[in-house]
Length: 393
Ligand code: NZQ
Ligand code: ZN
Image (cartoon, rainbow, N blue to C red; front, top):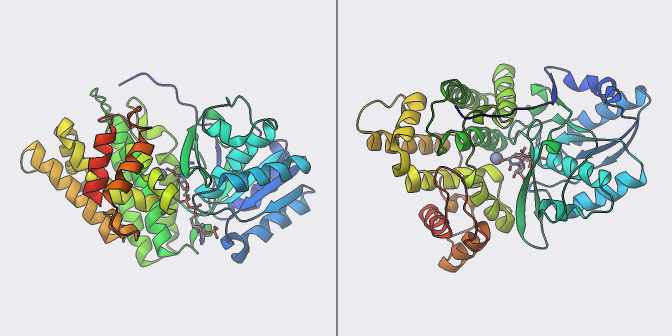
């Protein structure tokens, strides 16, 4: 096991009615003027937003509400929210929604705390982030894990880049998680969320680390099995509280860092996927399932035993050589993605067949013209990225 430091400070309020504690809990974090962010309207339609507003009003907390965050959240919205937040002198940012709203809230909190810096300069590492202000979320979709993660991903529509920023300052102070709030999700979003949750653990499972990590591996494997079982139940019955609870909690644990302790992380499929989302506005998790099989087949020779172990732990594949079991595990994972309605090729994203030129351009962007390597299991070059995109095309 490799040495590690783990600090996940987010307070989690989990269960039915969790959002009713918003005012009381936010006050404990020093909030008196709250900036509430939400997405395209689902939180309005469900009545959640007005319940939260009433809750804050009855506790005497002032608030400002801004809707309109889109999936693959844009830096332009963030800049506008920073201006509004500074003008209203808010001291807490509350996201009501999923990863896109929470990531926007993280960026807005950073921007308000650093008013002289353009937020995109922080994302592109031109400016260093050294302070932020308190922020949290009322989660409405189990998926990105942003409610506890140290990461936030923004898209700059002017430059066509989608970039993640990892820092401890991205850890929210609190997350309210009521599984019932996710009952209004369409089936495609439930499946996409489950796939993203799985990928957050799988991108930490396949690394170059050779030391044994039994406990971390077993958490990872049980998390994957739990998510696979729960999503299948939810696709039959979207209001299965127990299954939604499992999915929601697994989503937070999967991206909290717990499933990488003593190991490392890879996240190359995420990086290849972000380049795709930036250009085609594709749903995050769909880019991941579209690319994962091609990535896995491209790299598994480097450590077939690891993939064979995965196949045995997740699918009970125990016959054949390491190579055979590795391939069987990859195939079965793709079959599972297909079973829950997720694409296993880029064609499934509805953007048509990519030209050679388009693939080369995306691979160049992903690897900064072949000057950086992606991931850890096999650090990917531009040529690797091209081969993976081509195989998934
Ligand atoms: O905008 P509204 O109307 O709310 O609709 C949303 C949106 O269309 C809908 N939705 C959410 N809760 C709902 C609901 N519809 C009905 N009922 C509900 N209860 O779901 C759609 C997707 O929302 P979004 O927030 O985009 O989903 P998700 O949580 O999957 O977040 C995806 C974003 O997070 C980033 C992704 O790249 C993507 O931009 N990620 C963030 C990470 C992080 N910060 O740690 C890690 C991830 O790897 C990921 O990259
Ligand atoms: Zn993800």
